[in-house]
Length: 541
Image 1 (cartoon, rainbow, N blue to C red):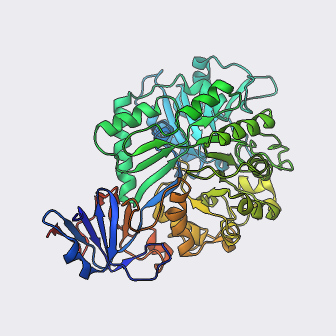
Image 2: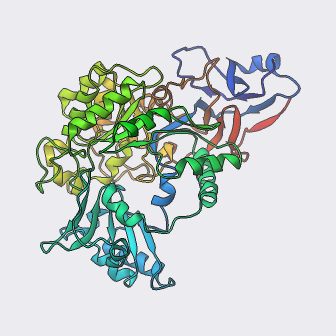
Image 3: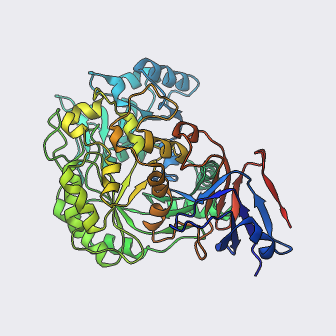
């Protein structure tokens, strides 16, 4: 059978370990059917074969974001973007401008607020309330694990004091028991978020398709989606009714503290459900929160005397849930940021073996004792990491994250290289919308340990920088293997390809971060192409 599509380029990194040169890839029915040189194309092609010659471009297996939130992120990124604000005055200005032409009782949402902007001041909603003129407002901090709600928003939600939750979540109150507006972790945030306006499913479905198209233009062909909340499945299904999704999506619904046997059975039952390019595969759990919030789980308290407890009020219940899921063959992904959290997650996974179709994973791993590194390898646990998150810290440890931890623990930050050198699969991702989704910038940051394009910024733990090949594997072969797929270019593999205009294994990382993507192919279909690039040829031959 003649291929539907043939993609040619001067350089093809198959990541199979085979050194034979490849310049052409034949694709039939969404699967790679052959690899060879340009001379082979005349023997492959038929009257309906599309041949795309990208000239001096470089083709790799399709890039996969190892940790992302594209559906939940539609709500998380609603309204005002504060991620570029560099002072509280700038935050106030952005919020006041947005509020100026709204009705007095109309909600205002914002996201991406950096807690470092508060300096030594308490993090409260007072500056927000003043800026929005008494309107109900809900402002998420950059890590999405905390938010500030104005007094008007708290009144609408009926929150007038502390609450008790099944998880370690907090309505922060002052010495008089009055809420300050700061809400820590999901259960507390949901008290207010449940009252905010939400776009209809059809509107969010259209927005999701547009977002996935933007992601495809950066070279992404898929993503490990670390949530499936509320009506998210309905939104994705509606998006797919509009046409094929530009990316493959693999969802891991949450398993929250307090889950009972019926809840676990439901999580097991939904595995494998989905659509043409999306599926449910795995379960996401949290064993701690974040360091900036004081909700991480550390072996010793942080400088504020916080971060000493598990997210689960009974950690043994977490272990029981993990064992139940693993026994049913469900791969788990556990959010574990602090050293105690990572240790406990590894202990819970010890002896469970590997699921048949994927791998157990630990997400984030922000501060890691050396003695735990080899446990990842011995237990076959994937390290899912976001090296771009170190940009929220500073090399001199003057930021909130570092000062809370102290120098010793801050020096163990995002140990990507130590884990890879030990033989641990390190899957890379963005955690969008916590950080930008563009994989080119994450690939660059994984090598540089500083923001690409900013050579004057001192790198954070530069010895933890990955080689170009390690970084690329973290976004391709290893990210695919974590979902039980083949992330290489070889006969029989899914035809998911990314074509760079620079060679990601040889290019300067700062240049790679902004280099256009020539072509993105998902399941043998071109979902993004850059026709203006020199040397680009396409046609049926």
